[in-house]
Length: 136
Image (cartoon, rainbow, N blue to C red; front, side, top):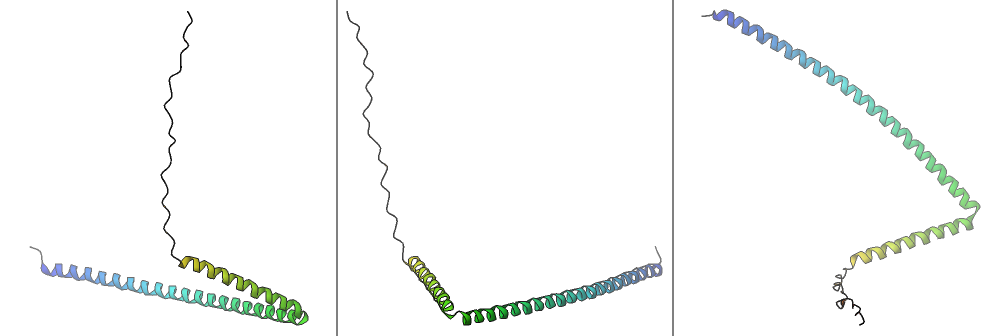
């Protein structure tokens, strides 16, 4: 039989090695998670700054276009009124067309009419060709 003291010593050293390996693995995972978290936070910050800048630029362009439109309407009031009237007519026409389409969709569709059976032409059987009778 083997000495139980040596077996216990070997088991303890293996257990210690396993604990050390687990601790090292845990430290590496925590370190990697921290690095990934920092990278994600930096990317989110950069994206937020870009979106904010784009929104600011778009807001400035809309304000500029609005001011230009108001100035043009002040300089040419009759043309502005005619354009506004055309827009109203176009929107009203589109609304009317949509209402008719929706109205047509809401009506129950009639059942399709049954198709008549196809007609087959009746043909008389063909007579055999007449043979010429020789003269005597």
